[in-house]
Image 1 (cartoon, helix red, strand yellow):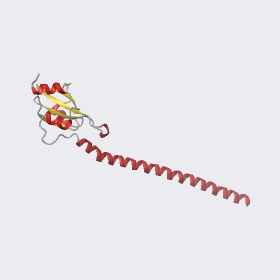
Image 2 (tube, rainbow, N blue to C red):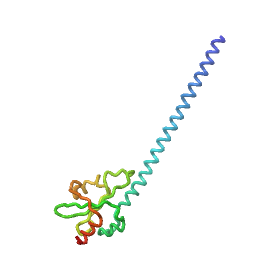
Image 3 (cartoon, rainbow, N blue to C red):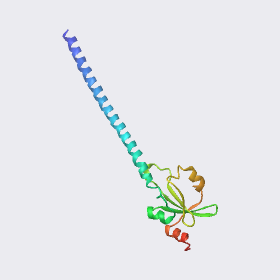
Image 4 (cartoon, rainbow, N blue to C red):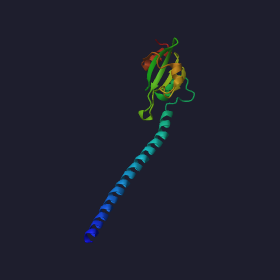
Length: 156
């Protein structure tokens, strides 16, 4: 009888220890999982709020007509390329959005040979209409900003 009682008590202790380990670990696992899910939700929410705000900074100002208006709003920090489309010389300003906004291309702004603003896209990688009209496969050559301005003004 003593031996049976001893075995029962040992079994109860073992069961309680196992239960403590199982449920203690379970709380830790669930707590960690909850924290990770919460972190992902916060990141998705922050991205949903901040990414559109960041992309809106790429939008040209209302009434922008030419390269001068463009540079007064954005400065000269864009990379500039010259492109020939259907025999016409066009100039394109390009700037990549911040990587964390997950752009597939660059923001592009196109100007004619006189510097008049023709159009823009916030992401040329996703904009099929832009690619059909202005074509990413067209031969584009980098051009220094000052050289482009000289050509627009007819100085060269």
